[in-house]
Length: 483
Image (cartoon, rainbow, N blue to C red; front, side, top):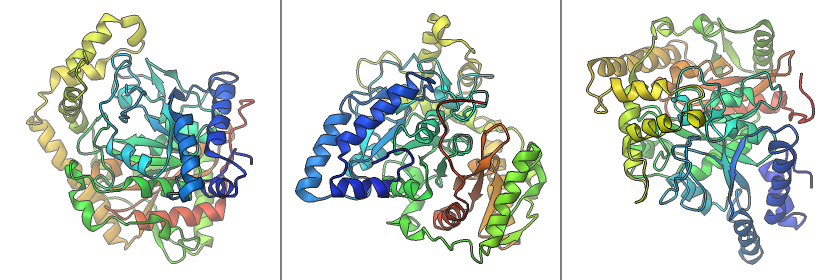
């Protein structure tokens, strides 16, 4: 069986028929990683491979033979972003050398759910260090521990951050799917630039327990895959309720048991989709705008009602917010305090000190953001500016922004170019899905993203899947030549 661009469903068929085993699949991915990530073009997306991967795969093959598969993810190799805890032989470092020797005491909640679903945790992928909260001017996809991830479609193009490795490893067929995390565009942005599907869930749908944090109010994990269906299979596995994550309290009344029921190829028919032209289109090039317009025409032909423009009246009022800066210090200190005994890094101050002691290895681009978080915030979230900015974010982005716009135009979803909607959806805590839409003249991927209100993932899955099936534009990178 050819594994390049294989789907979870096609691999499951091969596993069931005996044409392929999970152990063989892991070995094939090892070979691709060796040939293209660590040799050849040296894409550099894979930070660490799980030394237990072959054992896990072999055990799952035996279980399949004895009992049958647990479900769609049985024996499926999945990569994890390096800020997600695994209670095994893999490190969790957020791409930093300060935490390069750090082992988590136990699995993150979503990792436990992936193991229960029968997934093979293949390894961890590189990321922008500390989720792009290390310093100003650091390229997306760079970390002091892992180096620079390259965009396999065009090495002069950015990878997007901070889940760069999560998107690139999937795009290059180094795994079946991956988990990324997002605070403000960190799933949508690399998904757009790697021609992959990224689902950024509502904050509260997916547990954050055991994930190195950035912002308590905006963080979430989500799946990245080559198809909407594959991303939904992973989403199904990780959406179980976690009582230790307070954000999940509202999800009890909204969470679906099986999101695959919304994979409707006719899902665009009759759907009202709004396009917020004002503010969100100003950075587009001519070829990016042409790709977006082609995507809109595909949706129109599928029966969508396009409301254009459907401008968000508060968009230009949205300014820099101190929310993430103020939440980072308390969030990361709480995480570090729970590391196993023996860890020398217990606070943000310890990370900064370690970097100062190893400047050649760690401070290629500096650590200005870490320093700002440590020295200008209290870590108690009592600053007047923080409290006012948090209220303003909710007023401008959620209540008076997305909610008001969707109500005014009676919309099912908003459609943004690339990941540009993350500027507002992230602060609202609302869901988005990015889907490949085409490639620029230089071969750089470009996608479109659907966004909706809290816990409206079912609507977004319908729309994204219907568009994907009608367009089918994704193609794998050649891994042989660049423009």
